Amino acid sequence: MTRRRSWISKSTLAGAALAIGALSTGLGACGGDDAKFGEEGGGTSTGGGTGEGGSEPLVFHPAEGGIRRLLAPQYLSTVRYFFGPAAADAVLAAELLPTDNPVSGYSAVGNASTPPGLSFPEFYELAAAEVADAAVADVQQNGSASVLASFLPCVGEATPSPTCYAQFAQQLAPMLFRRPITQEDVNWITGIAGDGLAYGNGNFYTGLRYAILGVLQTPSFLYITEVGTPDPENPGFNKLDAFELASRLSFFLTDTGPDVTLYEAARDGALESDAEIQSQASRLLATPAARDTLRRRFTEFLYLDGAMTAQKDPTIYPELDDELRQAMVEEVTRLLEDIVWTQGADARGIYTSSYTFVNATLADLYGMDPVSGGGWEKQTLPADRAGFLSSGAFLTRASHAVRTSPTRRGTFIKDRVLCEPVPPPGPGVSTVLPDPGNTPKTTKQLVEQHMSDPSCRTCHAQFDPFGFALEHFDAIGRYRDKEEGLELDTTADVWAFGAFDSPRTLAELLLSDEQARVSFCLMRNILRGSLGHIETPGEEAALRDLHDLFDASGFDLKQLLSDMTLSQAFRYVDDPTVADEGDQ
Image (cartoon, rainbow, N blue to C red; front, side, top):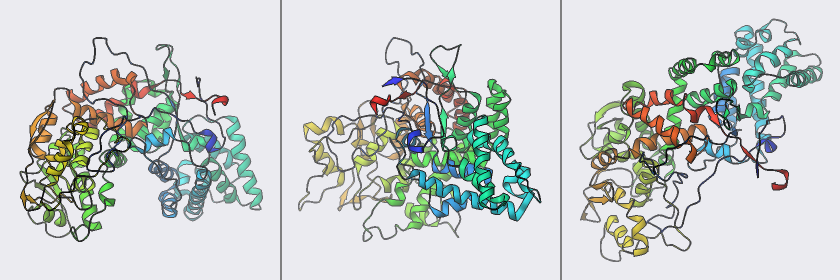
C-alpha cells in the first residue's frame, strides 16, 4: 500500500469506492449471559477520558481523507432541497436506496470504509429515474413555481429552450457535485441532455430528464469528497478546500448538501474566515434539519431502533406492541430535544435527568401520573429512575426475550457511555448462564455464578455490575421489587467508580469521574456518526481542545457542534491510503 493523493472520476461506483478507516479487532473475552456479547463494537478508543496518558505533549495529526458514500437520509434531503418533496418521497416509497450498513455502530463509518455492492449502480439508476420523473412532472405542472425552477429559472419558461441544458450544467450541477464544474462536465451533461432531446423527438423535458438522470448517478453526487489540498502553513497536512469544507459543514449539521447560501460562500472565498464559518454554522443550527440530524445521530448512538426490533415473549409482555415501542423511542428523542434545543442545558443530563416525557402508555408502564388523550406530558420521574439508563427504549433493547441481561446493559454503558469497547467472547466460550435447576435464582445471582469462573471474572467485573444496578427493571423497563419470588439486590460496584445501586446513583457516579469519560465519549460518538471514522491517536490533541470548550460551555451540545466546525480535526485530513494496482 502506498500513500498518494486520491481523485474522483466519473467511473463506475464500484471503482470509485475507497476503503477508509482502521477498524478495531477485539481480543478474545469470556462470554456473559448473551450470545451477542460484543455487539456494541465501539471502535478503537481505549478510553473516553482526558487523563494525561504520558509526559509527552500531544501533537495533532489529521485522520485520512477520502470519499464516503451519502447516507440514505443525506441523499433524500439533498434531492428534496433541489428537486422537491415529491421527488424524495418517490424514492423513499419505492425503497430503492441501498441499505446503510453500520460499522463500529455507525452507518457513516460503514459507508466510508466498505465498497459499494455490485447492485448499487442499478439501485441508484432506478432512484435517479424516480427523481427525474417527479422533478420533470413538477416543472410541467407548476412551471416557474416548481422547485427546480427556483434554482434554474429557464426550466420554468412557457417554452423552454435547449440552451437551458448548458445552464443546468453550469449553474445547478456545481451545487449537486459540491465543487466547481469543468468544461468536460459541461460537455457530457449537455451531450446526455441532447441525446434525450433527440430521443424525445425534440421534447425539451425528455432532455431535462436525461440530464437529471446522468448527474444523480455520478460519484461526484453520490460521494462526499474530503481529500483537501496541501497547506503551506501546516506541512504534511491537507486542508479541506472551500467546497469540501462547505460540504462537510452542511452534512455534519443538517445531513444535506450545501444550500445556495453556503455554496456561494464557498465559491466567493468567504469560508477562509473563521467568523464566516461560525456564522454559517449558527445559521444551519437554527434550521429544523439540524434538529432532525442530531436526532438521527443519537438514534444510532443509543441504538434506539433496537427497541423496535427486540424480540420478547408475548405471553410475558403482551403490552409490548408497536405503539408502546414507538413511544419508548419518542420519549428519548423528546428528552434530547428539550435538553439541547429548548433549554440549552448540560447534555450529560440525557443520563441524569429527573424528568422525562410520557404519553398514556408510557406513563402506565412507568407507574407515573395518568396522561389524558393522545398527547405527551413532561413529568418528574419516580425516584428509582433517571435519564436514558432507566428508559424503556434502552432496557427493552438490552434484554433477552424473557429475562433481563446485566451483561447487555453493562456492555452498552462500558462501550457507548464510557467509550471503552468490550471485545467479543473468545472461541468456544459459553455465553449461556448456569441452569438454576429447581432452586429459584435471580438473574443477578446466575450472572454472579457465571462470574465465579476465574477466567471470566476479571473481564466481567468491569461491566456486569453496571447492569446489576438496573435489575429493578424487567425486560421492557417495568419496575419490579422481586424476581422469581426473591427480593432483588441491585447493589454493585466497579473499580475506579465505586458503589451504586440504581440508575440515578450510577449515572451520578459516572458523571463525577475525574477523567470526564462520559462527556468525552459523548463528543467522540457525535464525531464518529457524523464524519465517518473512528478517531485516530493523532486527533487526540484536537479532541482534548474540543472537550475543554465543551466543559467551559457547561456541556452545551449545540455550542459544541458549532465549536467542532473550527477544530483542526474538522478542517484537515491526511492523504488517503490507496491500494496500488498490485495490491488489488
